[in-house]
Image (cartoon, rainbow, N blue to C red; front, side, top):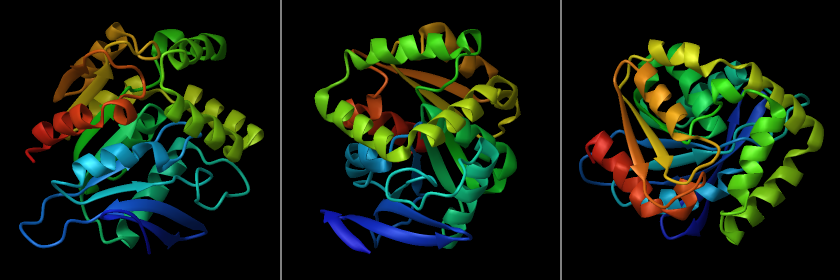
Length: 254
């Protein structure tokens, strides 16, 4: 365990054939609250979760793992599908003595969280789907690429720097395989089966997640709520960590 900044630590955890790197902020003392686990998006690492960890860490224990193949976690021989990623996430939580958590997915991470909610419901306190993918009406590579490029134009340089570096580190063929898994996943069929309370967060100017899709996602959830963070884009967790954390805190009762 290595201290990174303030109360944020870098941790490596052996999980079956994987070695998972994560950032963690543990408050210690006082009344223990259900921890928050942040699940990153496609090909990117947990580094862009650091602003949110810092904000949420003022109120509860927060963790952000690098899924296998991403960031500083060990790269498996082949890309893992969404079912495999959600199972590894559950095993990682057990290895870190996290019995139950508020899971916060961002972008592709929402697909992992939705799958986790069905496979490991006993470990899920609440679900937060921030900028959820993939819009079922635009499930083509070209359309999604155009959406992401349009959004990238409005994202700040620090976030784009992290994203480009992480994409290159992730690897081209691993990225293609993971994108195929993302497109094959039908999140709209899983959402109605999520029993835990769920919050959908969207940035007002997010071109990847248009308003009608975020509203549809919310409507499909049995116990769903939608929060829009004004004047924000797809990277809402990085760009507006205070508002992002506030929405999660109010939802989780922190």
